[in-house]
Image (cartoon, rainbow, N blue to C red; front, side):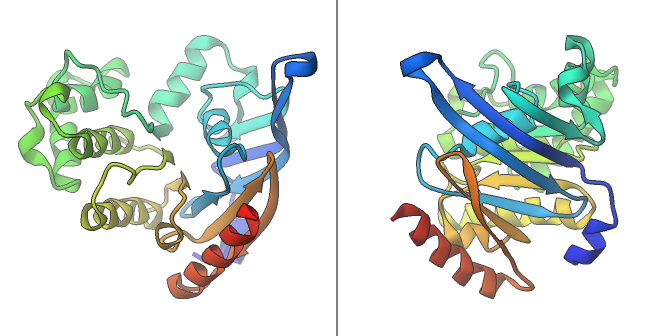
Length: 254
């Protein structure tokens, strides 16, 4: 999808002049400073920058897991800060898929049960939710893990189960924090291909990554430094994006 086409559609995610401050006085840390960002249907955005630049904070705010100190976060037009706890939980279950760095799988549930839980909480029957979970596991290439518990999986297997959980159902926004961190290069590329396919089907995705080659899967790369957006790179093809991402990443790290 072209940037012009995207601009004609309402964004799935919109951060309006968002700031996030932790602590007070001498201990105050400004994690984000006036970030404005839109992610449209069909768009895959990569977020890059050095450690401490605000990348993970950006994702937690976008997913409604934290609240901004100022500014607004909108998901499909809903201002997250205006929602009560119940409605916010519904948005997170139905509209947002989140891939955490530490997986956040429930140890007492099997892979299929971990994946299907959000759908069951939304009222889907256990049988229908399991069918969707099995389809998600198949999409990630790990159907054999369906009845295995997290403690019986490797880190890479747990990561792919967590990604399957983020993709189940009609998730309009997928947020991924270093989704390929625990994966070998071949599996990582396969996971990125799945995320790319979801965007091509109309979802929006935002991914934090340190790898320029992974950013090459995205339509746009946003660079953060000291909590500010310092650059954006738009690309018509993966090759030119890879070069741009690598160049700008080195600038940010200087």
